[in-house]
Image (cartoon, rainbow, N blue to C red):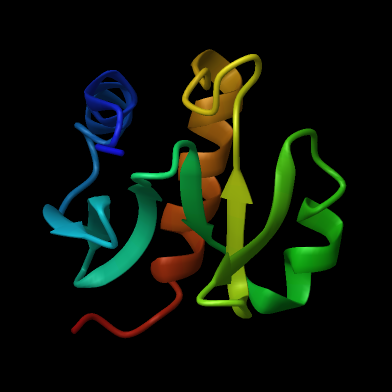
Length: 113
């Protein structure tokens, strides 16, 4: 399943003021990188893949529609999957902005690549 172009466009708009943002197709979706680190991605399975501080994963799992990111049967530490309702890509407004901000804030703590 191809990734949702509308969700990608909303993320792109939200990141317009961020310096050093790049886009790259990966994992069947579109990833948004900040300083060379993937912060958030629109997945081909629908919804978002968000990079977060692993120390905050449990706290962030308390948010609506958030779950652990599982790839090839393995949980990825420091990554969450966020899906909208009723469709996986139904994420917008403050909710989407908040998740994108989480991803950007965490990768800004990492040294640029």
